[in-house]
Length: 300
Image (cartoon, rainbow, N blue to C red):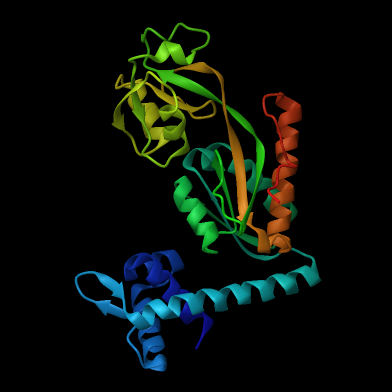
């Protein structure tokens, strides 16, 4: 039983789609199909029911847990060897929200690559829920999000600072001339919101007064819709406003959070990334004075 077959099986079991698994693994779809067939022949059991929708058989469901354990042990073994060698190398998968991929991660990416050129970095974009799930399932090493991390004892997290929140409004909106907006100013005001489960939707829902009139899938799209006059929105100050007017929301800010698996902290490539992120956050805080860095806030 080859490790690559188990990795391929796990990807197909998670996506329940050969095409999506092939894209994720950078294989041809025919290669994914061949590997699953080889694994099924070796085990003497069908792992998937191939109907209109792909689904796991009973044998496939049982294999998922064992595949996770085997691949996690392989990663631990690799981490132990890397720790002995001390020099970070190998693959490192980083995930971040769309806004952070555009505004924060490039500087981190560049600094890390300069210091540790032997590490091959893969950067992925996703929603907060998708990123946390990927880290939990060992598909991603570290992710960067806004807001509170999941309450999972297997994960560790740290706040790299805070980002002020602003209300973005269409040009000419009655709130546009204000120097600062307070929650009471938002009574009855029509808002666009990100979907349920997003940290900014949760923040908006905690404010009495705003009326959610529509949902938009991303912060970038939300900003463009606001600029087009379709409503107002709450976003981090670093989001490009796309022609909308940004007004500070009094006393409102969100944490920039870094999350990783506790058992990977000794892995040189991960440890180096955490250290680089801390160093950059302190540098940004000292130069701008706008962030409140809490590098010691690692959950214990």
